[in-house]
Length: 356
Image 1 (cartoon, one colour):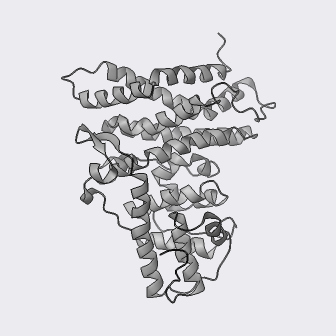
Image 2 (image 1 turned 90 degrees about the horizontal axis):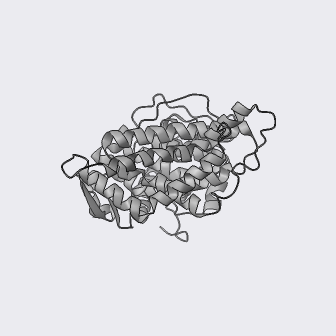
Image 3 (image 1 turned 135 degrees about the vertical axis):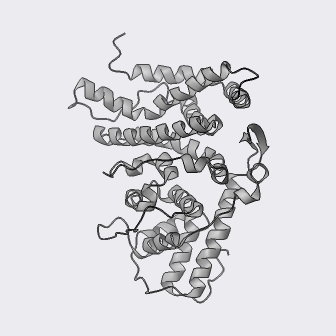
């Protein structure tokens, strides 16, 4: 439905709910969507059948449309142990790309429509962290594309479903920097055949987000904030890379490579990082730890360098041969050794405990 088409006979609240859902999926203007988010509306006791059908239809069509746009490029990933090139729907069978949404998605969409989540009184609690479907978690990840850089992000990060969503934790660690509760970040479910295609599809989005996060960190003045963000980022990246290594899916780490490569191709490698940061009250050791946390993305990149060394030593008869060949081809095409040199230069310049 276009913006000029009217909704069926629904209440004002229900119309805002549908518009919000469309906005989270990129089918409604961002400013108009945020206006709904930051206002409070009287929630009805129940939704009409027409409104529920509209939300369901929006999720069904809107998520597919977003995935089609994200999965349009002809990329190459490891499938069935062999490199496979094509668009998303050419690489992954239809039966692996089935999505199901539970009532929990509708529940937090209603809550987000009814409340300004930045207000202390706006709370939503789910009885359990279990039971979230692939569609539920994917919707949360897509919603953060719109809301992740707004004040709403930290409020959403406190919700059970978002707090345990590995995709959101990986892309938006800064949203979780203020939360006190530590939760396990488990990417194992995302490496099952029925979910791996999601990680493949989100590679460019992750790469862009990694770069944007590094840029935003340069604006921070609070050393404690930088350290908290960096520590969250380090945990998420470590969990992600651990899972990829265990599954033999190094190819799904090129989102990190691409994000770092874009940074190093710009002016980031030649400028002092964290130039606005106030570290005057910190001891030298605390300053070093703060910088190390702030550079979590570049430290994680070193894991890829280790994989590249392993790939160079894999022989034709080795089990990892196809994976190593794919890795080396992508590494060489993107001038990986050049990127490594830039990364190591930045790390050396910010290692306060290096006395060489």
